[in-house]
Length: 244
Ligand SMILES: C[S@@+](CC[C@H](N)C(=O)[O-])C[C@H]1O[C@@H](n2cnc3c(N)ncnc32)[C@H](O)[C@@H]1O
Image (cartoon, rainbow, N blue to C red):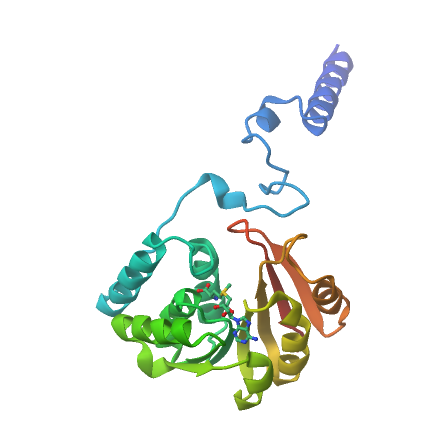
């Protein structure tokens, strides 16, 4: 009798294990729809946090001032081709978490993504050099930096970044590429030697329709880079870490 009870218990465990593995158990069905086992959304690497909202919380007056300017700029829509808010927040997280002191941005526009990075740089003691070919946009960005009180940590270089990159001092901790799409490979080639080991090269608009295939090839085949793709705000971002 004892042996028979033991056999039944083993059989029941086996059925439960198979049910869980095939997704028919209550535990598996309780997981939110569309999630993979790791809580993500499958092979394209969508944001696991997409079902939740978070808004930036100002810790002090200086941060509040920058966030207010960012909010005003955001209300103007994306007419200036600024990154989505969460992509900006991600840039801040990257810059602050690697303790970035020297950040380079290609494509300032009105300074929206730059301001997100400034939130990090005011705490890391870092500086941003940002390149913009359009004089009016560069002037608007400068006004926004002044309004946000970060003008002392940002240098705007007006001109063609491909020609002006010689002004960049190394070592660079973080590069953000968001200018002419066909120029991404040149930006990578020019700046990679000046990025420190452990530094990041982040590129925007990395979607099948927008990204230059030559850039994808360069970023994914260089043995000195660890590159992955994110889709936080639907615009597509590549993140390449220069190996130490
Ligand atoms: C997508 S917008 C940048 C948006 C900005 N990063 C943001 O999120 O707030 C691209 C900008 O790159 C600038 N640009 C394009 N080609 C450039 C070049 N060769 N050198 C410098 N800036 C360039 C454009 O004038 C435009 O303002």
